[in-house]
Amino acid sequence: MSRSKVSDLLKNGQPGEQVEVRGWVRTRRDSKHGFSFIELNDGSCMANLQCVVDADVEGYEATIKDVTTGASVALTGELKESPGKGQRVEMQAGSLKLLGTADAQSYPLQKKRHSFEFLREIAHLRPRTNTFGAIARVRNAISASIHRFFQDRGFLYINTPIITTSDCEGAGEMFQVTTLDLVKLAQIQTEIDFSQDFFGKAASLTVSGQLEAEIFATSVGDCYTFGPTFRAENSNTARHLAEFWMVEPEMPFYELEDNMTLAQEFIQTVIRDVLEQCPEDMDFFNLRIDKTCMDTMRNIIDNDFIRLPYTEAVKILEDSSTEFEYPVECGRDLQSEHERFLTEQHFKQPVILHDYPRTIKPFYMRCNDDEKTVRAMDVLVPRVGEIIGGSQREERLDVLLARMEECDLDPKEYWWYADLRRYGSVPHSGFGLGLERLVQLVTGMQNIRDVIPFPRTPKNAEF
Ligand code: 4AD
Ligand code: MG
Image 1 (cartoon, rainbow, N blue to C red):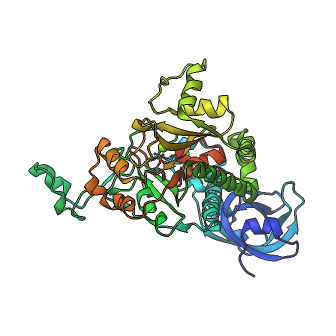
Image 2: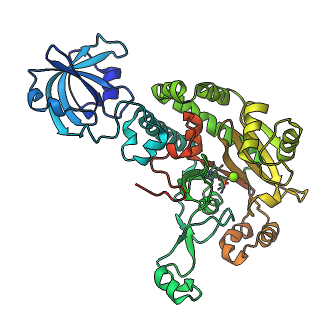
Image 3: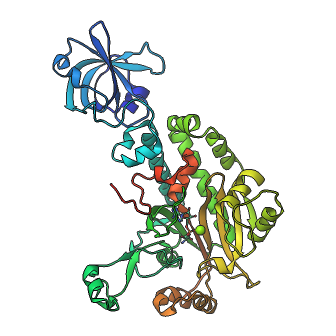
């Protein structure tokens, strides 16, 4: 008899089959007639396996009192057709073994509903709840689908460095990485000499793998990175993390329109995959977390995204009668309230804004002939706002160098990036999708801290 996953048994298990399951007790109910029901969850799916344990079962007497919520057990037995509603089969136990107790007084996950804020404080136990188990499975399905999407199209998966010496986004939000003795240095109070540091110069955690991805795009062709990125932005919002995962495809010979088409196909394909692979979890999110979740997904899958120049979006916002907290002004970055107005109220579907003012975008974006705007694109979606940021890249060496100067970047530090424009430069494009924002979109979860296993935010790096 081999050990089975509950998900498998509930789907494919046949009455009469002898099986073994292991997992954690969600509840135990004792019948007056001398037997117990154990609801067993092993995390493979949301549903529990109902196990009926008679008093004469091996192990019953010695352990049943300690088989409490949160305890871990191993059960063997026979599958039976279930007379109960909501499940096809249940188990008639033949043996019960208690693996680990869970003190009923102190176990934090009792049957009542807990707030997400409370669960964040016990991030080591929250994956045992329905919501966080479902999020873990959906996040996994999304990640697998992301790889499949690019692999099916012949993109190479490139591992770009986590420690870097260049600030791709130029926003100065980098976490420094050092082995210098900061305590000692603070006492001496001299200027810091980074040539003495581990890498011989100031280094940081990466904010993006894009610049390195461009190297590979302009040599081996279509490629993508998928890894953790770090930003020390001090924004305590429901959409920002200090550590988040980003997918960054980079494609030679793509112009901005090709980039937009790929971005739309990408989001639609991944959502379609998740709906197909996680139907039960998605039903749960639609029922318990956000009742509009499924409709939003269908709407995204079924329609082409709106494409709209930034200047026209500003006009729509200015002409709207809505009172915004932050003023709308051409040349300023849009706030999340503006993005949400466009996708939720005005268009009621995803919008790709493009051709943003040069002054609010990074140095690497291709300059338009109007000298005011760059070939940037942001994909905005209902509820989440910006989910993708990308652009066509500046492939002209002279324009790139001028832009670096304008952005106060030292071209010497980016010599290798400029070289890509010196030797066989080609038009190319790419974008970055924030994995957590996609998980938020799909699950309907309000706070980004709840869609990553262990969130890192200002003043918080527990677990
Ligand atoms: O728009 P961003 O800053 O673009 C880049 O980093 C480019 N280098 C991408 C590229 O062209 N290869 O970030 C891309 C996406 C955002 O649209 C958002 O979804 C997510 O990354 N993101 C964050 N997610 C969570 N927390 C944060 N602090 C985030 N900052 C950006
Ligand atoms: Mg952005």
